[in-house]
Length: 515
Ligand SMILES: Nc1ncnc2c1ncn2[C@@H]1O[C@H](COP(=O)(O)OP(=O)(O)O)[C@@H](O)[C@H]1O
Ligand SMILES: O=C(CO)[C@@H](O)[C@H](O)COP(=O)(O)O
Image (cartoon, rainbow, N blue to C red; front, side, top):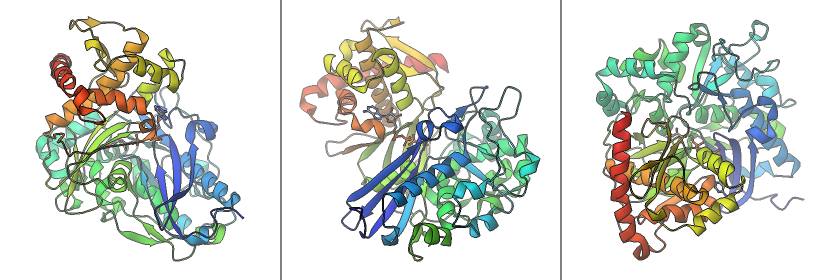
């Protein structure tokens, strides 16, 4: 009998950029079961890199919806094979990478409600799909189902736009113009128009593939899509993840008719009503009861975005700051009052619907660090760490900013290095380069957060999460600049201050020259 049999628990799921993960947590909040399916490694047939397909235009980025479903099948089957006692699961909830969208085809709700426990989910949701990898040149990324599959498949498009997409600039400008400009949109929805935000992605789908749009009965975020699989019906979008769409009025938590109208027709009915992030959206579907032995009363709590879920899970309090070092790097904090601006985002708070959270997102996060690791540190994190250990905090004044893909905060691309003498240089020695990367990434977070008025106070706790937060040298490298990760604040605070102002001058110049 498996060691984890017969322990009452809740399950937490994460449908993030590179993998699906699960944890089982008992009544004392001990995590006693963990597993994950890594898309690139475990689902080779989808041919993703970092969990996504980057299309030929370099801007369109999608993930196959069936890959997510299949990953869930694999994890559940592994849990079953390990003797996991599903009958003890009282409730489940989860998170999804933000902004990504799934397009359920007309008839999908009937399929979801009548799944056969004898088959896997992916065998029933898209039975005879021939998978397209990255669409060849000239073919629309909005890959529609072949006609033979009509009526069987549950998805109007098989490749879902995800948060790394930056192909909707035209739709963004259109949306901002409709509501009276970028600041007006930000006051309404918490953010100016951002390419990855779902409303703009929906507008693009409607404009480029109206047929697929009109065949769509429901549009889910990745989070509400995952919840729908467990629920056996369309799960509502929650307020917090719904704030990443440029569609939700963050103050009164209803869809903005002006924004909906600017994106696509009949959109409200395809989105359904948004709900508070802590809502119980229903009981688990009979498919999971019959196939895996979940109890029929097992509650499904609304899924939310991975960053809002981290805010909730890390029990962030006012005054704390969190950094997530996942595929993206993000920085977020709890806010009582929204202060929407032209940079960064205000989302509804997932814990207290009266409050908010602020978030900054940096696209060149872990994948950028991996690239430099592969180029300079023999693809080894321990070699990478050696460079951080052997170089001084502050990097003797050498600074670098590394944006191999178009950054979100701010919009900028390229690698930019500055020597201690303030000259732009084309390379650094390998160990200096590694420290420059880490310190530059952290510096950008601090500068942008301070630009929004956020201050690190003596009592501020900085909490780190995400894959790279396991790496103490990376956290310590970032500690060079302030009381972020304040292990030895007295040792480096003065130096940090000096280098920060130095960096601010350089980054301002760099950003100005690219505007
Ligand atoms: N020891 C490590 N040092 C630095 N980065 C790491 C380490 N282990 C994992 N990572 C990074 O974590 C990333 C994955 O983080 P994770 O939070 O699991 O991503 P996501 O949730 O977006 O799929 C990987 O891309 C990898 O670069
Ligand atoms: O776009 C954002 C936040 O606005 C990203 O943070 C996504 O939510 C992806 O998250 P990870 O997979 O990197 O955790």
